[in-house]
Length: 483
Image 1: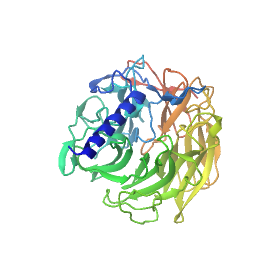
Image 2: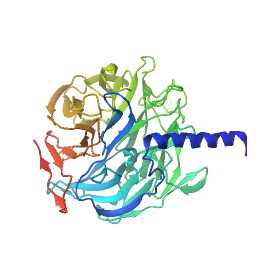
Image 3: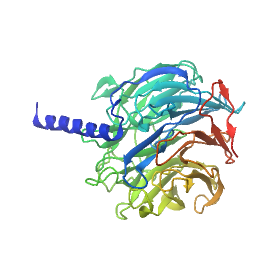
């Protein structure tokens, strides 16, 4: 065996061991998931933490993370054919001892939610393994069960009947690797879009032997046989990415980790898009790029945060009603919790008149506050997220507010505070794909400084707040209107 091969194997083993020790429950690092297919009897969100900080804020980030992270999408999708919003989330048991993958729906006719199907016990407490959801042309529901790195497998399930959450089958998918068919059983930070008449286009991360997050994409006509994974970018020590799809166009925004600074340092903002199912990629100006991008200075750069010595945290991306990309980020001076890294600006980048512009929506108190963009017309854009201080200040989340711009994103005002006087921080507000006014945003709550129970919530377009019960045995459940 060649020396460089031996070194690569040793580096891979070391990186995965460190990841497992710091981010995964030691008793279930390598456990296979278990298919359950039972009723969850309520909506219990997973509580999760990452990296103890040994200060008053206790963790780098933590809380009720049933709809975490921003790099997973979508968690919900509206199907007009049956007038239902199907959604998934990371659930748990009463002891918060494992991660369950739950699937439910909101019926827009009856205004009720289905008692979730408890599809999978992932045998971890790592919310990075949360699922995402998709619907194909025939109405079958697909659940993609992600992994965090390489220490646990990933899974794909498809409903046995269209628009039905009662039973799922496990899909034994394959992908092409160096021209050979291999089991498709590992993917992280999964983002999936079904394009009518074409199939699935997915963006996801693979970890290389050095532990770097390499971003790329793959396609499949049927969700069973996948093509060769293609790298989008590998700059520095890797990336995070977020993406969106509208009318066959898929756009992706990503940052990068500079070499030698560690994975907590993330900076710069980039954007690429494809309109031909991944056959080619170009910038917002239409300039075709050759993949992968490997240099810091490249045509995809939207904002140079390196020169400003600022971190960039990706929140959301969507297309406005004219098909132009809009990207929401938080910028700050560092990754640590607390007031020392203020101000944390929520910035909306928009491509208009053939150039990128950005405007400040508001500020909040944590890098890991996360909200979503809601383009409603040519001039009206909303952002819904935990921008107001919550009971655990400077921890992720807070009180959820609705911010509105009526001049296309230039100026912003808070239209409504949706949650208030909460016991726990609310975090990770997610927009369903094709969001219906009755079920407009989905999220969970949780204590930012100690393990706690976690409830799930949703809001309608008016900003009315609904809570889903942690315990319920009936098949269909009427959500509780809080205000």
